[in-house]
Image (cartoon, rainbow, N blue to C red; front, side, top):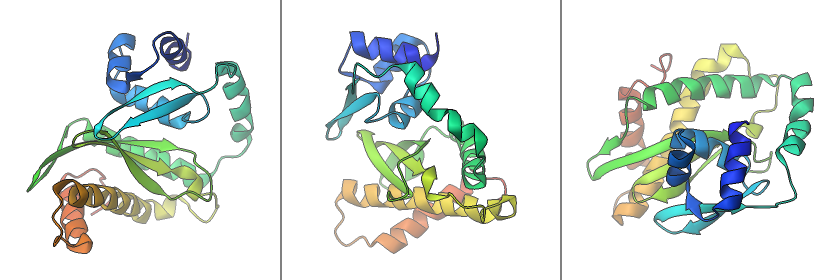
Length: 207
């Protein structure tokens, strides 16, 4: 049984659990669970928001089965989108480094965050974040934003920096909202966050 099938079975039998508890029950990491939950959000699963408390998950449509999802993805094998390939490679590297940096330290405390790749359509923003818990975020990268042959391996370095800038946007926005510092401006805060991300050496080619 695949992890996706196990995830469906568990949520069907025990709806209303947060990703952390689901991961413990399945014996996998929260990152593994969140990657599938957000990839199939509003397709197989539905997210119930609880503000700054961990969101919980239910089955979106009990009639949709894993095999149907697998079959719907088959056409992608015939088209290797270079933009998506680069994004996935960059995020794999960032994930490896984040595993060694459990929290992002700031002057006002620490923030834990995960980064996942999903397909949210060409009309959706490249990146956004959702609150998993207090000072615990998931940053969502929409790889549908790059559906052009124009993006190639030669642009990987600039693309990696762009990804870091987008992560910094999310962290800065959350930081300002969370600390409620009215006089704190976005650009200086974002620059501070971006420099911190660079110092973490999340991307080897980004400097």
